[in-house]
Length: 128
Image (cartoon, rainbow, N blue to C red; front, side, top):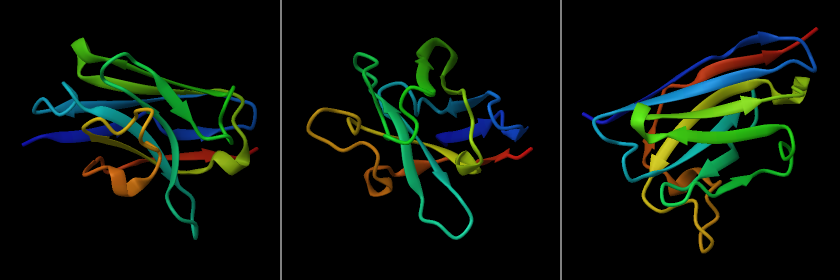
């Protein structure tokens, strides 16, 4: 059964960095585009970044541009989200998601309804 599993969350001070990992099993990351979403308490799930399977092209939410970097390593069945310059507003549960050809020019790529496969999430807390 294809699954996604996130790791790497934790408690970090403002200005710090974290690297989240998303490990896929069952071949789910072989041909699918991958996205990271986050959900803060009392808020809707928000798309953070996505990366295409074809050429590694990526998209970012305006709120994280210049601070976050998404990447993937198909040989490791994994995707990553390097988060730098973290702010308290970055606090939330971070989810990885996967689906076919979602992070492309003719798609938004950062809307949750575009993805059918989801991980369980990893908590990220930014606090002094």
